[in-house]
Length: 272
Image 1: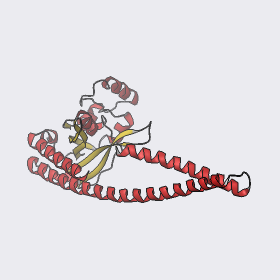
Image 2: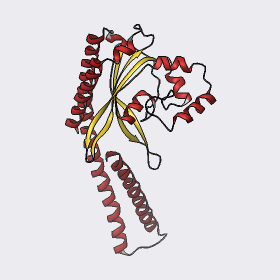
Image 3: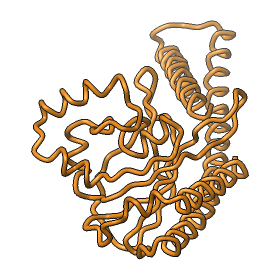
Image 4: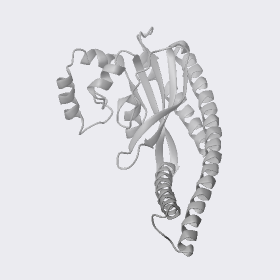
């Protein structure tokens, strides 16, 4: 709803700007003697211009107030989500013995960006915990793309050994990748080798992570539950533990990830 209203506000501002410009030009032409309006017409044009300036000032004040509130809300969400992610990483370290310095955790929320008709759904990171630096892939993930995108699209927890997938696909050309991707497209199922990525996206993400776990963030809607985004846990490469995949696939880790996702969902509801 918020993104739809953003488009409505943009359209309204554009129409107001055009009307204000037209009224200004008409009055300027009247003053220059290029054309003449009756006193009533001149009053109407001036009234239109003044009204539009007033409305623009009010809209600007309201927008500033809404932006300040949105910043506070985002800060609250980030604080609550970061607390839950830290607790999740400590829990995984306790359950598996994996050093939490080798782990990272992120909260992604789904949102729509761009203007109609080219609006696209994206997964935007709003909170992240990581204890050592890594080179980011720079990919803007989307539902159905990557492990987190497949998690959001399917609405279920996924654990994938992405390093094993990279090794299996090593040496694949761009043409071979597109052929493989076209065959997988009708049946995503979370098991596609390409994970819905383009060849360029795979090249950028390849070699950065070893294992990725993703669990959906669930919320409520008028028609039932909906997927708001996901919580992901990843192990960077080189992976010091050869059993990372089986450890992250364990019931205790799955339970901890689900509990963290539930806590973050509650934070989102409380902040909405």
